[in-house]
View 1 (tube, one colour):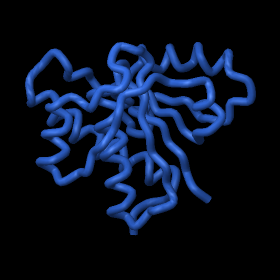
View 2: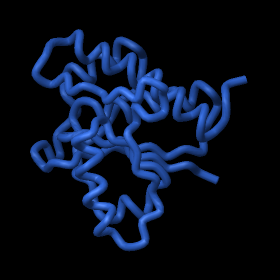
View 3: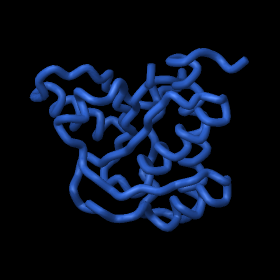
Amino acid sequence: MTISVLVVCLGNICRSPMGEAVLRNEALKRGITDIHVDSAGTAAAHLGEDPDDRTIAVCNTNKVPISHSARQVRASDFTSFDYILAADGSNLRALERQVSQSEGSKAAVKLWGSYLPDNKPIPDPYYGGQDGFTKVYEQCVKLSNAFLDEVVGKES
């Protein structure tokens, strides 16, 4: 059975495409191939754009393949994904408003940080420097592994 995961941030050019790429990469490193990962934004500001250059740079530095075109969360996402993981509380609230209007939702909508004891949101690095993107990458690696541990099982 394939697990489907949607990672969500505001504009879908920084945190969520990085999270998508990192989660897919961490799953493949564990030999998990029956996972479908995508990302989206709660806002429509960057539709069709590639990820931020700094997101791409951090992924390339860490040998994580990344290819994505920004899109907005759709009503159908709530019925086609098993998990919808929000980068922060603001995006979680936006998703919760949408899911309440979505008929037949099957998705578990959660703060991605809830898979770790500290329950930390992923800070938006957009207005900062490259260091912020590196920190988001490191957090995405930890969150990806915590998510996979809970949903698929601990690494052997």
